Image (cartoon, rainbow over the protein chains, first blue to last red):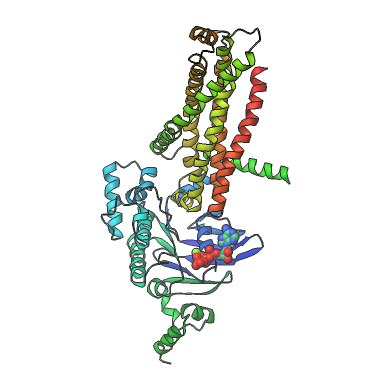
Length: 253
Length: 249
Ligand SMILES: Nc1ncnc2c1ncn2[C@@H]1O[C@H](COP(=O)(O)OP(=O)(O)OP(=O)(O)O)[C@@H](O)[C@H]1O
Ligand SMILES: [Mg+2]
């Protein structure tokens, strides 16, 4: 489980996060939702220490993350997998080398064992047989899946995904969402996902926080979305007139 | 303001090097990367270093013989002057200034590109000490290979001097060789290697620093790569002066 306590973050004059206190549960897909620019990426980067908060705390189970020294931070990070918004695959390495990189760096496995582990991760994301392609040679959706494979190759306890389905068609998005959900259940890990995709919210939103103007405007799970009368939430999820009519008919209005 | 800026960058530079000096997560990965860098820096620069060296030697010989014209200084001094000029000053300084342009800009844009494409963040998340993994192999490779390049450069310069003076009839083959063998002080070679090591350290670490802390987009990346060359060059020249004062006093 990961907890944040009263996180504030500003860049120069600009306040992006104003007091975020929340929990991300183990074995669940925890969603951070909000409009573009709401501060989702900033919050995610704070959770993993790529950014420092102006004030506030992040706890990994019983460990206060920002009180750790560099070595201890690295020890925590060995248990963290992250999928970046733009995938961040190493573009001069092949798919296999990308996924193998954490194994090369941190394990003493033989080449054969690593190869087996890479193949099983690739299979896990339904991408067998692209081992020798370069990231530039595969599609965006495939890159995301390679990113996921790389993130889970060391069997992390915490998985962070920054917009895993931005730029993908709805069908592929759902495949990726389900993949992340399955992995979360299978390995019983704490997964935090940034998204502004309403399908994801409805499909995999087990614990949702909605960021709005730097604060948490709503929290709940997917079952509560439809019924909620929180205007900011409704405005965000059912953004178009079409979706609003859909909601009304679903509610039997 | 200017001073504050210098102190800010110097502090960040020292901190980066502090983080970079640590036990490798996996020696074999660092070893592999070091070998790759040695190949890139060493073999990759051999041609340009050789080309420059041969002209440095040739020009030194031609110009010195022009200066000697009509004086009482014996002609074999040309060999002596070419040897010492290149060993003490021209080979290390010229080679490293050129390498700052070639290797330095390359390092800055490679690391800077990785920073901008979030590759460095991705490695950090895995638990890699990126300052160490990205910087240490480059510095070690440069410290090993650049002195070798400088030595090769000095040797080729001396051949350049020979080619410019013997076949053209300025002096006899035996005179040039006599010059090369006169007044030899082995400390000059030590001085050459000290300079080469110091310059190599400057040009790799400054370039790594520029790349590692790049922000923004392709314009900033271009600037980082230019800054890597400009600041390496300035610092190499300053260090050259300081070393000259220290080592010859
Ligand atoms: N390094 C930075 N320096 C200054 N401002 C920043 C920086 N990073 C983010 N911001 C600001 O913080 C705000 C939140 O950005 P963030 O990237 O978290 O948005 P987001 O919710 O992830 O949006 P999107 O859905 O488009 O990815 C933005 O207004 C952005 O301008
Ligand atoms: Mg974002």
